[in-house]
Amino acid sequence: MHLNQTQTNEELVDNVTSSLQDSSSTPSLSLPGHIRWVSTAIIAVVLVAGVVGNLLVPVVVLRGKRSTPVYFMTNLAIAHLLVLVICVPTVLVELQSTPEAWVLGPFLCKARPFVEYTAVHGSAASLLVVSLERYVVVCRPLHASSSMTRHTCVTALLICWGAALLSSSPILWIQYSSDALFLDGVRRPVCLTDLQPLWARLYFVVVAVVFFFVPLLLLVALYGNMAAKLLQDTSHLGITGPNPHLRTRRQLVLMLALVVFFFFLCLLPLRIFLLWILASPQEDILALGMEGYYTLLYFCRVMFYLNSALNPVLYNVTSRRFRVAFVTICCVRTDRRPLQSDFFTSFTKREVECPQNRLPLKECGSLENKDKNIARKFKLDHSSS
Image 1: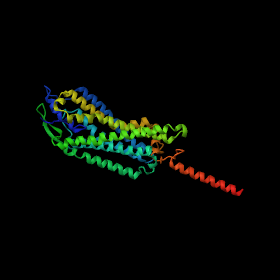
Image 2: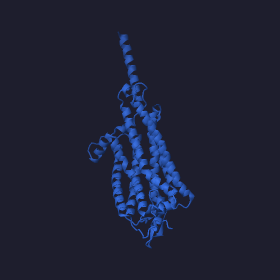
Image 3: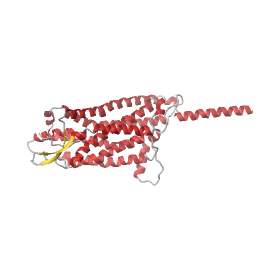
Image 4: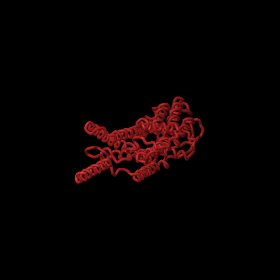
């Protein structure tokens, strides 16, 4: 049996496709029309909206102060742009080609899965790091003075991408291009995933655990604790009065929680489908039939690529000032003053609070100095009298 399949976002899922073709009484040399055109339309919209949105994100955020979240948001935008620019166009070509034939050459055969895995692993690690930073600020405010500086932020991002590149490098050996004889008797180039070695199969399981399920559990725990702490702080507002810093932190946590939620939601179908392919006997996979198999496959792929276009939408939904800045950039206003959203500036302030008046540490110090000045003035006035 030839493994005449093109790669997918998780390359090995197509290893069964030739068997699906063999199970049909007649050769199938084109995708069902509804799968082809619906998938093409959705992915094309994702490509255009994602490229425009992710290009505008750094333009908007870099007009303000260069704070920790600005670096992480720019980092995520770059990761999504890599997927959108390098990987998504190959899917559009694939949808219009003979199923399982690879017409884009051996370089892209290896490059597409490598870029996809690198972007996903780097994004997961980056989300974990920025969420840990938020956890310290919200739940361990006394340690917030040692929170991430620009140098620490850049170092953390370099480590994240170094780990992503290293963990994705086995794809370059697992994936390869070849020629295969199709059911119509024509030999065509194909892009294959070599799953014969045990280490190759274990690799896909390990990266799913390390870069998906473990970060998911950790992030659920982190945001659960942050939500509980913010609810607890909110209950004290009747005593302490309105606190703009608490409101800002709530907005930040909400924004990051939504980004994390949709990141894992969009990647979950493909991960589940991949693990099912690995664990299921071939008979169960063949039972799907050609149409069922490709319907599931392209649903998972559409969800995967949709994640790359969602973040700009989430930023606009969760921040009014980001929406204003976004519209200002799109309308090309001549006003070049820095635009800062409410969640950009909050990362630039030390959010350690005084135990009683719940003011930032800087303001605590200013009040203390003010009290000393008042006391000194009172003594001078009293002595002169």
